[in-house]
Length: 341
Image (cartoon, rainbow, N blue to C red):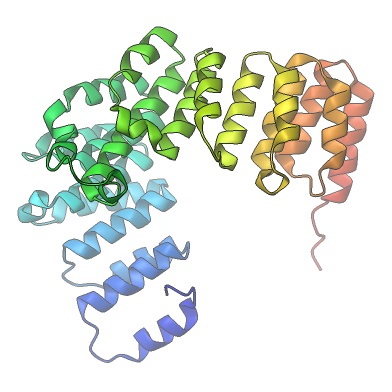
């Protein structure tokens, strides 16, 4: 399963005459990792007496598919599992995440409130779910509920521990997840004063983490503070593709198409992906840089739906409707659905 050979793994599993719970767990985990969540759910239904690991895994599978069918399954599982399972933070976290991904915020919050011992991953799952369901203010309220000493407890155990070593600990990873959720919520809200207030609460040591840096670049761009986004970007010695794209997008969101285009041309070629093209084309679109957008668009070897759509938007904004229509027709011709035989 870890090597992606689902067929052979299933063959070995099927040949076994005595299937133990760990075997079911290994298969379910493998299916989920190989984007076969439905098979993981089907396998779960074969288990007569699922343990906490199987429950956790099926919740993860439901979260991956996130349809009404999976939501109903989660509700059934939540109603029927032993009460002792509710003391398992992994089970609760997975249930909360599953309900949130399926859009049932109420059930997720009820489970969260039911827990007598809330962990940082549970807070993270709840905050992430609230953001996914467009409840950013509520996500920030959850952040405010987290006790400061709980959020930072890993930092104060041994000040001599190297930061890179600390980064590998589950506790610190959970802390970073919480702050990433906070930054994402602030970005979606788009309120500068609130962003400035909450960012001050992020420990300085965390500001060197590339995930935090990338998220902050995006957030500052969303709230209109391009200078702050640029300051963070320029402090990164080796920005990755996410940082480059976030900075290009920050320029574009604030009507600075020329700056976005200049940065795009400085970006290492190997870092450029579909999202980068979309961001720079959108930046050109909102700044009226049609010729520049054409040049970039024509340089794209493989044009996807989103890049074509963004270019069409750019042409339409510039009142180049005939050219936009030609691009639509050309794309539809090149991507015509195959006729049934």
